[in-house]
Image (cartoon, rainbow, N blue to C red):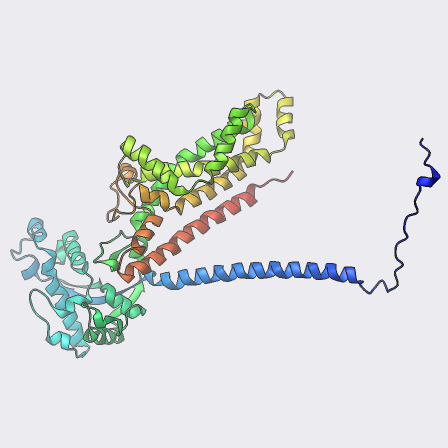
Length: 461
C-alpha cells in the first residue's frame, strides 16, 4: 500500500451549483438538443432529395416507355382474292410462294376503302388512290403488313377466296400521332404523312377502325429493321439474356463458391493468399468494359468463338461476376460461428466434413443472396456486350434449338435497349424506354427473390 503525501492531494473543484430548475434545460443542453435536431433534419432532407430523384426517374421511365406496350392498328375485312394470290386455282404452295409481298398491297387498300365507304368517311386520299404501284393509303400501313398477310396465306392456303377479319399494324407515324408523339406541326417537313392523312386518321379513330391495343409482340417479338419500328420487339433479346444468365450461373456459382471455400477454410495464410485476396477485391472495382476487352481478346480473337453469341457474353459476364460472388460467399462463410466448426471437429468430423456438412449449409442463404445480386448486376450490364458485337446485331429470329441458343448470334436486353436508343426514328426511342421498364422489372424481381431467400433461411446466433 502506497501512502500519498498530503502535499500532492489537490482539492477537486466543486461542480457549479445548479441554480435553475431540473425541468428547465440549461444552455449546454439546449445546444446539444439543437445539434441533434439539425442532424435529424439533415437526414430527412437527404432522404427526401433521394426519394425525389428516384420518383422523377421512375416517372420519366414510365411516362416515356408505357407507350411501347400499346400499338395502333386497323381492324379490316381482308379479301384474299384468288385472282391475285393463286391465279391457277390449284392451291399449289410453290405457286402461292411465288407471289411477292407487293401483290398484297391492293388487298389492304381495297379493305380500307370498303371501311371508308361503309362509314361514310370523305377523304381526298380515297379519290387519289392509284390502283397499281403505289397509293397514298399505303402510308397508313406498316411496311410489314403485307408480309403479315403473306405469312397468313402460306400458313393456311385455304384462306384464299375468303374474307377474314385481320388486325393490321399502322405505320409508326400514325401510331405516333395517336400517342401524341407526332403532331400536325411536326409533319410539315415529313414526307410520309400530310394533313389529309391526319384528318383521315381522326375519322378512322372516331369510327373505331383505328384503335390502340396491348402490344404483346413488343414483349415476345423479335427486333425489326429501321423501316419497321412498329414491329420491333424485345422477345429474342430476352431469350439471349436468358441463355447468358444460364452460362453465368453454371460457371460463376461453382467456381466462385469453390474458390471462396478454399480461401476461407483451407488456404494457408501467407503472402500468396494475401495477394490473391487483394486482387479479388480490386477486380470487383474494375470497370465492366475492361472485362469486355478481355473477352474480345481471349474468347473471340484467340479461341475464335462466334461473335455476338450468348455463350461469349455469358463467359465475359462470368468473369465480371466472379469477384462479387467470391466476396459475398466469403462473408457468408465468416458469418458462421467458429463453434459450429469446433463442434463438428470435436465429434470426429474431418475438416472437409465440417465445412461441407455443417458450415456450407448454414452459409447457403448468404451465398444465394450474393449470387442473385451478382446475376442481377450481370443482367443489366451493357458495356462488356459492346465489345463482343452484341449491339450491332439485329435479333430478328428465334434460335432453332438449345445449341443455337448459345452459339447463334443474338442480342441481350441492355444491348437491345442501347441499339434502339441510337436509332433515328422516335418510335425506337419509345421502345428503348419500354425495354428499360422490362429490364427494371426483371432486376426488381431478382432482388425481391434475394430478400425473400435471406429472410426465409437467415439464422441468428
